[in-house]
Picture 1: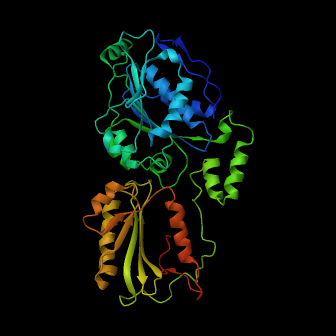
Picture 2: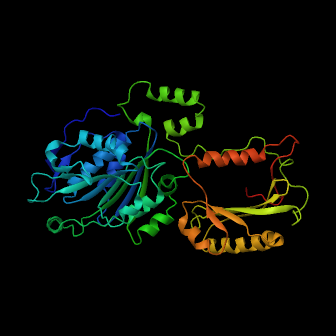
Picture 3: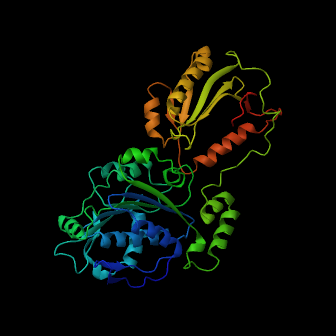
Length: 429
């Protein structure tokens, strides 16, 4: 929810440009807007504005669409959600509220849906175009080009392939008459590209990985050589002065009563780290330690492994792997682990995977069944020809489900034994 839209106005900047004066931002929106204003020429800026429900994310995105269409005459902008029907009643409706009607010189409400924005002092025929569309079919985006891409409510529906595809579409050039006008003011390359995204804190989504955690391998691959900067601006309920009294308390009470306490913590506090530091309270160094030596080939029937490809530098997200054998009883014994970072880490990981196949797979004449984070498609494609490797199922609730499965295995059954053990020398996990 937002307050009624005050009128926007046009004014003259100190350097002589006529610009639009946007309605007043909230303090948190202003932080994100300042990043846009201060972006350097010939740069690409990624901003994630995310967190709590009711944090004024859609209003911010709508205002920035208006700003980018007026401050860059002749710009070509995409405003998107996963599904177009959701966009119409949220983001497009919000944009219509904020945009002065006299700025819209042409529009279409039939596909392709767009608004042409023009300022009175621009050269004849010059306008910026803002497209509004759903992007669930990301394969149809390949021939487009934009100066800015704005995605509302990215998680959980917007796919990582859609985001990666749209990053490569940031290649629109301003009209020649605009570039010449900037050149006269000493700005030979005025274009600045923007990828603006709002999202709630759903775990295991590309927004969290790329922007919140800055695990940017896939982003960098999508736009090689770009002068790229990535920013995360948290939005919280307290940042939005236009919500009704008691909004947060009412939402929390409903979610908690429905048994969704942790979901409430994510959505209402805007926390991406709800799962960090989570422990299994009944872990026992005695009960869960495998005390019977390394399992022999007669004791197990399958070998399984999990992978997480990290960043190949000395300080980034580490690369990790685990291997476990499934006993004939169905219990799991973790038998090997890998956790490293630095140059060449992915080559060392694959050497380790080959060694585990020799040690644990070959004695029972089976390949290790590897699973890796589905968002790391590039590394999965690289490793798949050599290993029995598939992507994880993923989805907005996958982290809840997998944490529950791990906890269920660690719980003792009726016999008093857990379903999961580890070899005594494994200490990294």
